[in-house]
Structures are given as C-alpha cells and as structure tokens.
Length: 221
Image (cartoon, rainbow, N blue to C red; front, side):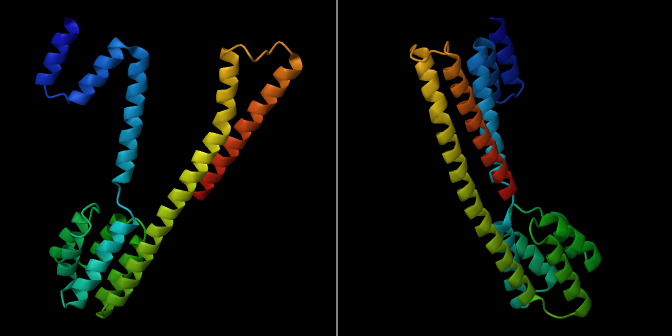
C-alpha cells in the first residue's frame, strides 16, 4: 500500500514511467530487478554512444559548406547553411560567431571544437581562406572526403571487432557451459586431483585467450 501511494506521488511529480517501473521491480524482486536495470543501463549507454556525432556528420557538413561557397555564398552564410546538414554537430557557437561578424581567429577554434575528426584542419582552412581571401572550396571538399573515408574505416573496424568479440565469447563460453552442465548432472567428478587440475588449467587458458582478444580489440580501437 505504501509503495502504491509513493508511486502515485512520484507519477504526479513527473517521474518517468520507466524509472518507476525499474524501482518497483527492484523493490519487489531484487535480483531480477537489478539484472533488468543493469541491462537497461547498458542499452541506454549504447544508444547514447550511437547518437554521438561522427565522421559522416562531419563529411555532410563539409560537403554542404563547400557547395554553398562554390555557389557564391559568403563564408558566414555558407557555414550557417551547412550546419543544418549535420544537426548532431554542435556548430551553434561557430555559427553565432560567424553571423555576428567575429574575426576568423574567433570562429576557427569553435569549428575545431565542434568537428570530431578534422577540426584542426578545418579551422586552419577557415583561417587561410579568411586571411588570403582565396577560395577554400577544394580544401573543404578534400576534408569532406577524408571524413567520409574515416567513417567507412570506423564502420569496418566496428564490424571486424564485433565478429572477433563474438567468436571469442562463443569459443570461450562453450567449454564453460559444458562443464556447468556436466557438474549439474553429476557427470563431472572433481574428486580426482588430476581431472581437477586439467579443468583448472583449461579454464585458465580460456580466460587467457579471452583476455588476449580483449587487449587486441582495445588496441584496434
């Protein structure tokens, strides 16, 4: 009864329903509730990571910037229009500075901070274009292609590391599952010291293999 009253008060206060459900499950069934909350947190973290701006967003923005400048738009207007092509990039500060007529030395650091891959190169190209007065369309196109290539390489790396991770867990998990099944069914007698030693060595080798794969994947990242 008390939990129902507290839940109603929390709902009226604006607490999200998923949060209320998770708390209710954790208080009713602690072990399954904690497992569900941990899985939910992991999924939320993965989704948050997926929404971060990446090289593809940067490539779209730079292609738009080069296209606008090639069409005769001023750099300030071109930057404002190109920012709309990559809404996940936080270009608001750079756009505000450019539209306010701030010098290129003020706009360039904002560009460098907003772009995840070629920020410093884009800032340098922006400064060079402002100081020399020459067109930087070709430079921005080249940087856009560089960002697109980086995005393709990252996708390929994610696919390869996911395959290696899945293979490692399958290869390492099957013997553990087999040992667990044998132990539960009484077919694994660890009373024999030699057999126990073989099992311990095998599990240690499996753990070492998984650890080696994890280290290699971290190096690949």
